[in-house]
Image 1 (cartoon, rainbow, N blue to C red):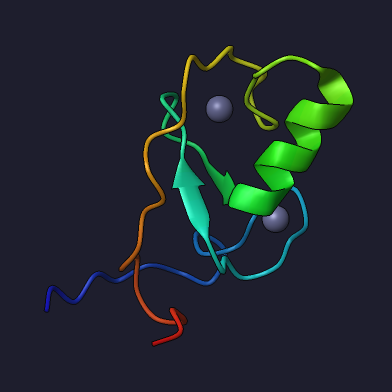
Image 2 (cartoon, protein in one colour; image 1 turned 180 degrees about the vertical axis):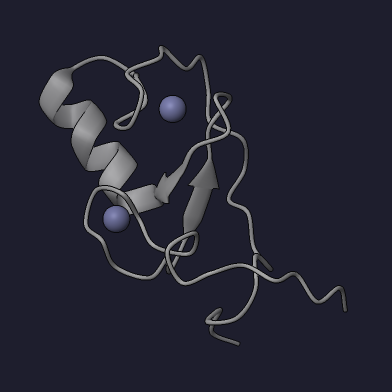
Length: 72
Ligand SMILES: [Zn+2]
Ligand SMILES: [Zn+2]
């Protein structure tokens, strides 16, 4: 197990400000909840990053193991 030292801020979703449950890493290297991202995309009708508005072709698969908090 790699012990990454990440702050709670880095583990928080910029959209809902909650600790990630299912983080998705976008191609712009921003991370948001999978749910928040999909909700954002539904609202905007375009697949862009909620943080930097960069168009993202496809999010990378959900990223687990950013630190703690992942339910087993
Ligand atoms: Zn969120
Ligand atoms: Zn971004």
